[in-house]
Image (cartoon, rainbow, N blue to C red; front, side, top):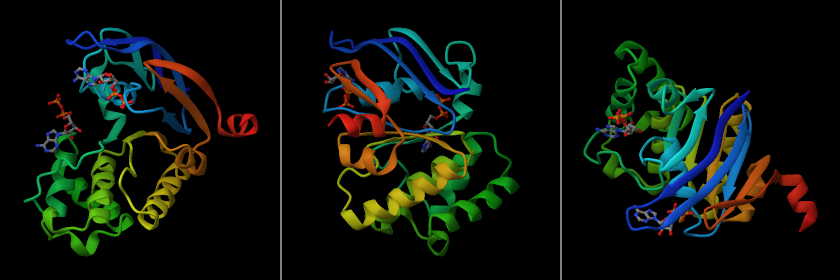
Amino acid sequence: AFALELNDLKKVYATGVEALKGLDLAVEEGDFYALLGPNGAGKSTTIGIVSSLVNKTSGSVRVFGYDLDTDLEKAKQQIGLVPQEFNFNPFETVEQIVVNQAGYYGVPRKEALVRSEKYLKQSDLWEKRHVRARMLSGGMKRRLMIARALMHEPRLLILDEPTAGVDIELRREMWQSLRQLNEAGTTIILTTHYLEEAEMLCRNIGIIQAGELIENTSMKALLAKL
Ligand code: ADP
Ligand code: ADP
């Protein structure tokens, strides 16, 4: 079964920029997949379309078999998105942020509180649950973004440049927790422009350039070629 299937995906922005020129991509359930490419290649556009924040021009997107055009709500339930920029309300507490997120996805409050304890402990943020998000360190904010994305227990976690601007120690720590999530069964797709990051984490890799997939292979096979 595929966690994600993109068929002939195209995006032309209002400015006339052709950001995606017919992307075909399939990511298997359980995979840890990197979408690698230089700035402007179309990575954020792809993620934006999959998480229904950006409208596609044409083509199809299926998430665990749910087509975005016909089963949008089901598809959305499968996906946890960790955008590159912090987009929580900095004046809310850590707990409010994760519990409210569960609410957006229809998780009952009692269950949301149970999950909040689970995911905040897992992210080493439980002690900080009553602290306003603006008071957290950069590393804690990153972990909060991930904990929030897990609250509706998505089967597919998508991270956009998760370690951009993150120091090496924190990067290692994030890699470790992403590995654990993947081992526990969550399919993970991340975008990066560091080959090293993809190499450290990912089983399979797609290389995107100027809106086209120019390589789609296992990390092992790619490294053997270099
Ligand atoms: P990446 O994430 O790989 O850096 P993007 O998906 O952000 O690439 O961008 C792909 C192309 O689309 C680039 O040429 C970029 O300038 C353009 N682009 C991205 N977002 C917009 C937008 N909202 N309006 C117009 N052009 C955009
Ligand atoms: P829609 O309103 O289009 O159905 P969603 O409610 O599913 O969209 O939200 C889209 C994304 O924005 C999700 O990642 C969701 O968690 C996030 N989001 C929505 N409302 C808020 C909010 N008030 N604060 C933070 N994130 C939010």
